[in-house]
Length: 66
Image (cartoon, rainbow, N blue to C red):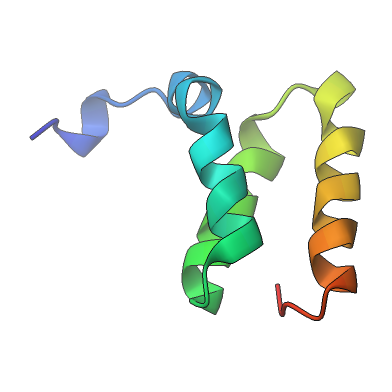
């Protein structure tokens, strides 16, 4: 198990972006979706942020609470 203090959040988001997006899209756990979105929002480069907002809007449009 990796010590939480050794995890670089930017690297984690870069390496796990698709997994985080899948959590937002498919999880029924509102807390898990909020955590995934927070990580993506905070540690995604500005140039990619608009794309993430579009993905969130698409999820919200399907009636999934985020």
